Length: 178
Image (cartoon, rainbow, N blue to C red; front, side, top):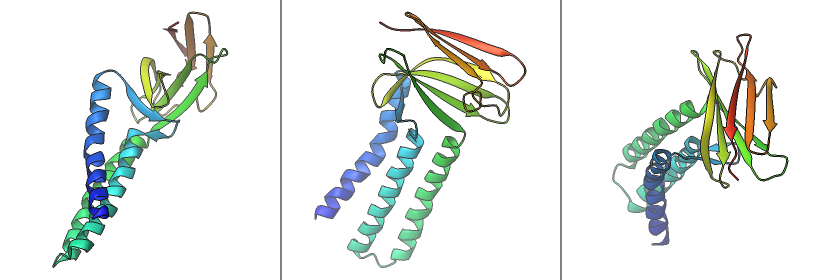
């Protein structure tokens, strides 16, 4: 009975997580734990937990044809994991703290065949990010990874200059909240 309750609790978390992420995104926030755990990685872990729990439930219920149930569950959740890995593959996150330690900026480099992008977020707490601005770079170029950036902290503003990969520097100036 304990396994069944744990399974239903895990299934509830698996189903509610995308809803919570959608509502956060609609409110103007993004979810990131550290610099590696994006929503897609968290969903992939929840998919694996749901698959293991479903397999355990198939075993405990004693289905007459468990092989079909197992194959269906594994294929469905692996398709979900493939989509999560694909969406997460081109993103790289970097974290920078202000000299006074009051603010932390997270920069996400996103690269695709058409254009790259550096998005700047302010970290509100260990989980939430608030977008501050973005800069378009040349296709396939990651200026933060390549060290081609300048970050300057002033009292009321933060400026980020990045080399865009096409021979010019682009700058964005963002307001610091006091």
